Length: 203
Image (cartoon, rainbow, N blue to C red):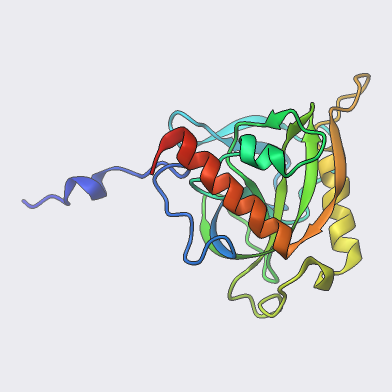
């Protein structure tokens, strides 16, 4: 009986074991944790690499797009340096929202995403940027290269979601949405997160 080589016997960690993408910082891999149909907030378990139930969504808001992170990135000091008012990065991989015309209803998938912009967010004073991207080979979104080409209503839904998705009744809001930026600045944020990851974990 033959067995697969050792490399194929084990699942790579989605944060550390996957490639960042084919043409970073413009075209990157997105590992999807949440879909627009999820009433529960799932988040990568940093130790095992599996999805963990973080919490039920505390409000009626659902994520307007696919939501996950870019492998081999880290929100550290370089990312914080691009986010005015932040004390540091949040220490997590860089978050990414991906627009797709066809519904993608399952998480734990990897896709190629083209970076078109981002949302600058502070979470308790920490930089917690959300990169905005489109599915690279999407039939509708494939020609979009700038966040300015995305309808304002979709961008507004994203900013509203992130301003409310951690709200708990009776407690002050921790999240502030500081603004939206275009693809040039987004590419700088992705590059900074790649460098922060290398500083922390090496190649």
